[in-house]
Length: 305
Image (cartoon, rainbow, N blue to C red):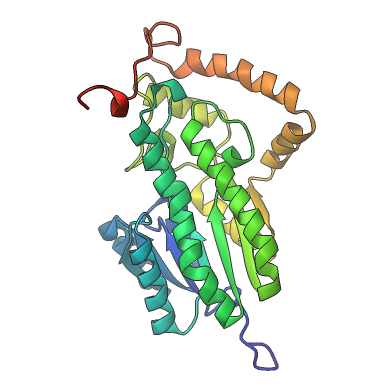
């Protein structure tokens, strides 16, 4: 509350926050850090048992954590969880649209099902969260929607075609919504992490890497991009959320990379192409390099599929 009694967002003591993908990785780290700063966190994930373990660890540490089962692809279920949260706690200060999956590999190897899997979670999952929360935040007069994108949503990212497509869309959605939402007292941010040391680097529970890619070598490649721990990301990201930054890039050195992409895009694209050749040599299994396999039709389009 403000001095005049007008409801306002809480940062972060006594705030109420829903975090999708809260069972592990970035989502779990955000939940723990928010709870440490006094927020009540609702960890929403389709891995309910893991989310419950995170909630239990938060409660054991003196925080306030709850776990709910949610598949962000289900718009009706998402709406119900937001409605129930507000009914129980009287408010919703933050929605962290964080759930995401990745499918690595060349676009030529994708099936239509691969595209659908990534779009349904990474983009439509965010859309469902916005639809469920935005109108209610307008009605209460405050709120902050934080959509987890990626630096892959700001840069050309080969071998991550479906992922970078959805993350670019999440950045675009967030920027458009931020402009619209300001007049209603609602904040919107796009969280654009660099490389974070989580299971998604090798596909995670619901994603996968291309058949031609070696997961061990892929991890070694990611290490060259100076990954940080999710706990460090959460701490830095929440500082930026508290400051109501529109596009949050963590760690900060990626801002220089994004700036170079924007100011010297042609040169940057040449560098990406050159880097791609190095990646292929590093992480693609022998005998499966580009040019050694005849592309086949997607499974969805083959006769009898």
